[in-house]
Amino acid sequence: MGKSFIRTALLALCALALVSGIAVAADSWSPAAPREIVVGGDRDYPPYEYLDQSGKPAGFNVELTRAIAEVMGMRVTFRLGGWSEMRTDLQNGKIDVLEGMSFSEERTREVDFSVPSAIVNQAIFARRDSPPVSALAELADKKVAVHRAGIMHDYLVRTGFHGKLELTATPADALRLVAAGRADYAVVAIVPGMYLIRELKLSNLVPVARSVAINRYGYAVKRGNVELLSRFNEGLAILHKTGQYDMLYNKWLGVLEPERFDWRTFVKYAAVVVIPLVLLLGTFALWSRTLHRQVALRTADLTREIAERKHAEAELRLNQQQLVQADKMAALGVLVSGVAHEINNPTGLILLDLPLLKKAHRDIRPILDEHQRQEGDFLLAGVPYSEMSVEMTRMLDEMQDGAQRIKRIVNDLKDFARRDDTGDKSAIDLNETVRTALRLVEPTIRRSTGRFRVELEDDIPNVLGNTQRIEQVVVNLVLNACQALPDQEHGITVTTRYNRTTSNAILVVRDEGVGIAAENLSKLTDPFFTTKRDSGGTGLGLSVSAGIIKEHNGTLTFDSTPGSGTTVTLSLPAASKESSA
Image (cartoon, rainbow, N blue to C red):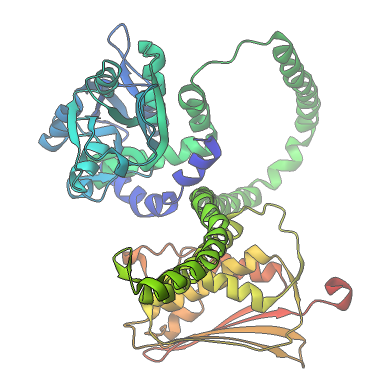
């Protein structure tokens, strides 16, 4: 799996974890006398974690843990052993944290998970001469080797797998069983599987399905150990921002074979570094001489500069928190885009084959009708032909319409998730932008209310803006309206209109929810202000939305009465005729 895909999935929860956990952790982990933290892991799960030839802990998880310990001032000791034993030791308090554990809802009953440190693709491995498979469902009635107490063991048991499971102590043992012909298939994560095939020289094994399941993978602590978990979350966020995470990821997971050393590349990059360094040193020397002459003048301004610096540091901390949240939302977007791509492939096959099936049905129907007239009614797929002849046309049409709808939703998701770093503006149709945003949140709308009404005025002039960013604002406003409803009997109305007096295109989102207290209305667009902290709110949605609308020279206003609902009005200036042309 590509690094950009994984990085996008890893940051989706960091800001909330930092805001809610750092204050608690600061009180519980005193830098004056740090307690040694016992870190557990699997002794045979390379390249994530394993014991090397000298019996010392090694791998991506181990080096990542050391880096987190260094930036957070923690003392750690490693204890790697059998996976089942490590899970038991965590619950018994013999270890404090597992440095690598795949997420599942069932496991959250025993442990609390950190933000993900990696995304793990589960794969199916088989001998080269084995029949190909592409999904776990095709392994029914087969002998399948899996790691005991691993995430895929849990999953297969939970879903009532019908084949025979061969449980092994390590993923390497599972691959050996298949290589020796004692099992038909093995379900192992793709990166450890490829690593073990290379190291153990299991040349008769190949991955036949590379992504049958995708798991979040990160640190796990015993349920309720919030203090320790927040330290690891904070340290992981710091490594992402400093680039240390990317360096460790590329070293251990980016490729399975190291690149050969290239002297010409070394010289080129050395020159790129050395020349600016010489210029920098020369500039620094000149700056130092100038600084000595300015010391006397700077002394009088020292007090003012200290005050300005404190103010700048406060703004910097706020901007850093916003950047962390923005990076994580971008990461989630790339994850959604990747999943959408995987959905598009089978949907494309359906859309390609259905017209041919419909044509075949039209061609064969006269023959079947003639057979019915001569021989009488007959069964087709267990249904009388007199009924099937009518139902077949309807089923084929509904299948094609459904596939087209899947394709449209997936394309909307991909467009919404695509990063737009330039922020270029063009003349856009506000109504079409609203329709696209509503398709993205349609499942949430259906769950929230049975009374959703859309009234889009025709002939609204285009507005000058960025489609993706305006969609982001509409999505935020509609989701907030859904979250404000107490039940499905209360409704939401989305309308657009054109104000010819001000030449503004207007979008209004009105809900019949619980409303907002008067003292909170002026704080709605403040960063990190939220009345939904207990349900997962971060307080950044409306803040980011207000910033986007300000960039578009528009306005965002709120009107609310507690108990009577809220009305949000978005106003954007219409594009000039030159911009719309």
